[in-house]
Length: 287
Image (cartoon, rainbow, N blue to C red):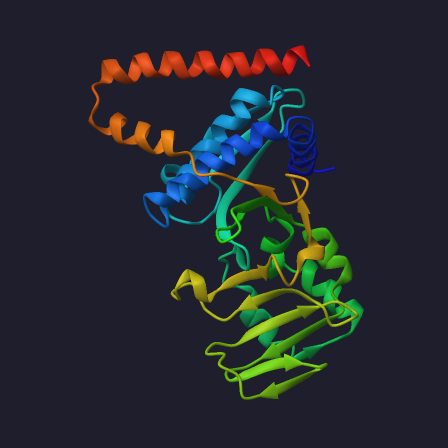
């Protein structure tokens, strides 16, 4: 079992035994959408990093996001260490609405597939593709997506099962501009503006797609994408399914005050907040 897979199981177990713990953190994260549509994504990195350090005793996390990997050669935001095995691994945090989800911005895969063909169904060839150097990003997906449905005030931490996707991909199909895949065939008259390679299972169910775009293209136009709605069978939920979240108006007010308070005020607030967290830990240990 990989270090990240082991972490996922431990996270899922903690969320199962103490659902209020992760519910509170996710509620606080998505409250940040009141400030701006992208604010919650950046703060999610800090929040999950602190969640691990405070509540997952066998793991240590360091937030490396915007500093270490600014060149985008990697997409990781936190580095986690298993304190028992001393294994280190990097994780990319994504905060997306329920639906399309980007797993990698790597641009090597699309041209590689173009050189192979437009309809790839041979199982041996498909496995060769996944084992190729160009498809290294597929086997190294360490993405932890925080998915939300704002209309229903529900959220979920959904991790894409790349191993299952590799095992069950039965068809890779090129879909060009103004085309779509319907009833087992590529048909015309679609609003698609950019071509993709579509990955399907033996029953023609959607798994993921590789989008057109080289390294110079907009990040939204390249790399590995999937869809939390259409490919739900290829995700594991670390929160054990969808959970309700509530907007924390008190946190919203606290942030306003924090931005105009002095550093001494921040120090005092930190003491109070850590005391509250320690009390939560004591309750967990008592159970």
